[in-house]
Length: 183
Image (tube, rainbow, N blue to C red; front, top):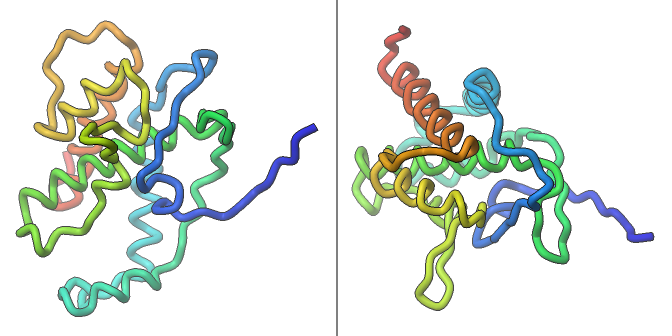
């Protein structure tokens, strides 16, 4: 019998320069807008509890490292092949959220002002890029969302459709929050 070990990990520890596969027997990506809104609201509430506008100044950004952590639930991995046994829905959604945030900061900030989150989205090895959620069927969609914020190919795969729909939800939810315009 194998020993199962639980360890607290930050998002940085979990995603930075990692590659995860999703076994064929796992369900498709099925989160709906409701779960995405709940996750974003929970993260926003936790962030706002610690937020101080002074921390936005470049010289004060290190204060952000002292913000309270947020428990996102367990992620169960088969460490032999880095397969996600449980947590695929959350990790996929967090990857979409990180892609959106990276695209947003590219629009709004100079390179010097941007936070380095690319390593949480993808990594480069021997000149080849791949996403942390290393699922071949999803790579083209994630790459397009990362580069352009859109995926325009014909969609037949239910997970790809849901990924695109949830990315659109993230964009909409953030646009409402940033502009203060509720629908």
